[in-house]
Length: 343
Ligand code: NDP
Image (cartoon, rainbow, N blue to C red):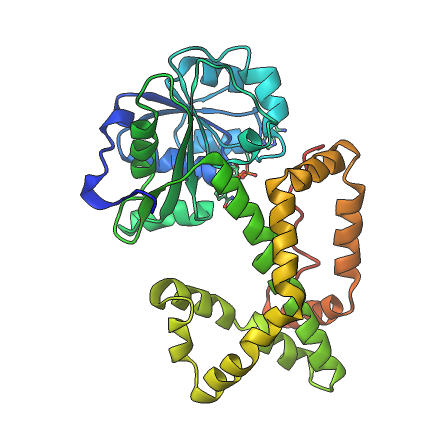
């Protein structure tokens, strides 16, 4: 079993005495910087001088170029998107980081697959929230925590784990409902990719196919889309899973629903799902997914864009657009694309 820390057993003191640079002021960067400052930690921001930097200044932080912020801090939280981290590290951080500093990642990806190879004399830790940035910011304000995985890849000071646990506590993980779990860069990268390639991918494509089948069978697009995902019921079921357990939440559904789920659930696995999951895990563990994604970025993201285009062209998203317009929501086709690494 992994070691787990929560509540008052988490000492945040080791981080209170450190100067912290948060590199990147996006989803995680802004949330973690604000939470750390709330706990009394000295924080500066390293960012390109643009909109995110303006936001950081409006929040009352001093903003420095990435290299200057990294050079001056005891603890560096490297919170850029995973795809841009290697180049920025190579060009701006590697020349200035030095012995005695702690470099922290919120994801195990770049270290696990060797896209970043930091100098031998840095402490290398991971503090990876299992929570989107908005939750990292909002939950501690309500006195609630969230789960965080911590790991140590290199421990030059002999205090790396202590600092990782303290940092997780200082960003708010240890409040009631949260916990800090000992893990590793490799384990985090594996489970993160595995979730994305299995249930997250399957859910989107399965829900899409369910909608298409219902509409083909004569159901109105409005009823089909609302029933399948637009009502928000799926989110409520997700919350109930966290509170009552994966199948404990099934007790909240009608007996008819429970019977149907018990009757059909296993049959989906029989249809090759287990074999596909095994294949996905192998490609994560042997590095071939990371290699393919790296190649895709180097070659200009042609397949990435093609697959997005193909998905959005589906007729279902014309119907979704009409329904969402009436409901005043942002439909799939209007959702703004995230910035891609080559921008
Ligand atoms: P974001 O996409 O929100 O990061 C945006 C920040 O990165 C901005 O400050 C932006 O500044 C900067 N940035 C983007 N591109 C560049 C570039 N080419 N050069 C310099 N700066 C750049 O990242 P997230 O917060 O989503 O992710 C950060 C880390 O946290 C990742 O390791 C991720 O895996 C991890 N994580 C994310 C979670 C999430 O829910 N989002 C959950 C748990 C972990 P600008 O555009 O001004 O240059």
